[in-house]
Amino acid sequence: MQARYALDDIVLAGGCAYNSVANGKIVRRTKFKDCYLQSASGDAGGAIGAAFYVWHQLRPEAVRFRMDHAYWGPEFDGGAIEATLASRRKDIDHQNCRVIQFTNESELIKRTATAIAAGKVIGWFHGRMEWGPRALGNRSIIADPRRSNMKEILNLKIKRRESFRPFAPSVLRERVSEYFQMDTDSPYMLLVAPVVESRRTVLTKEQESLWGIDLLNVPKSDIPAATHVDYSARVQTVDLDINPRYYKLLKAFERKTGCGLLVNTSFNVRNEPIVCSPEDAYRCFMRTAIDILVMENCVLYKTEQEPLEGDTNWQQEFEMD
Image (cartoon, rainbow, N blue to C red):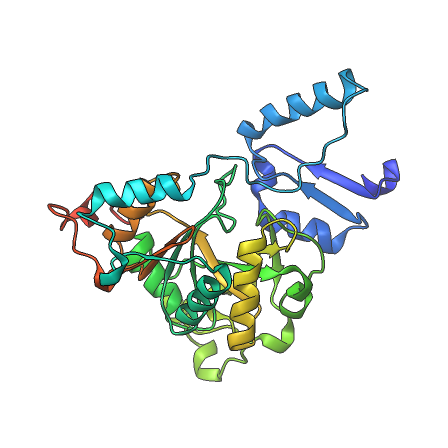
């Protein structure tokens, strides 16, 4: 197609555009210089295609527009979050540390990065919700990709999935080629790329002889929680101009650990949609093994919360695949 039409760029849409493995191969193995995939590339995304057609083709006087982020959903300010917490708690007196409210964003990000580096799992709720099936740093569960047991922790204790399922990394845009065999934007987590050779773990003969789950559980790189059995990962690049707070968190984690990426999975459990509201986020936080919930400038530590009443057997609702 590239040779036939002499095009440098390609746009993919429809359900097939969610095949991130194929998308990655298009980027690496063809002469297309840019592959654009919008965040909701499935059938639901056809609506925005129709809207763009009308905007650009039928209204030539209209200001040109490029969709360069996915943050088009609902957002909730501090007042809405505090109201939710107040309705859930008898009070939100930060003196007893049930809820800590930060006025300094840098301090909040620094403490969160420190907690991640210490192995804590974070529920991260900020700004407008993502449009599409991927959590991209506004409704995310985030964790340390360097820990070999993190994949199992997230799958079994939070996501309620089989322990071997991989998780995607969010990586600083300027660092992507240091971790993966790609150097292009992937803001919507729709490109799979191999981990660079220098970061891969050389398996012993004994490990190479393993099969099935045993082989899957062998760390494949120095970012094992974000590396699949075939040394690949579904990559999200994070840019300062697109998502400043999430970018700053990644930078703080890099300063702390030397690692410029985080594990990022959607803020939900199996069979439930991604959380949208503060109420959704609080409920998911309290019903899972998430250690810390960060909602805008409010931070809640699980160890300082009282259990939800009458909710002890909720896991029975969600049978694993």
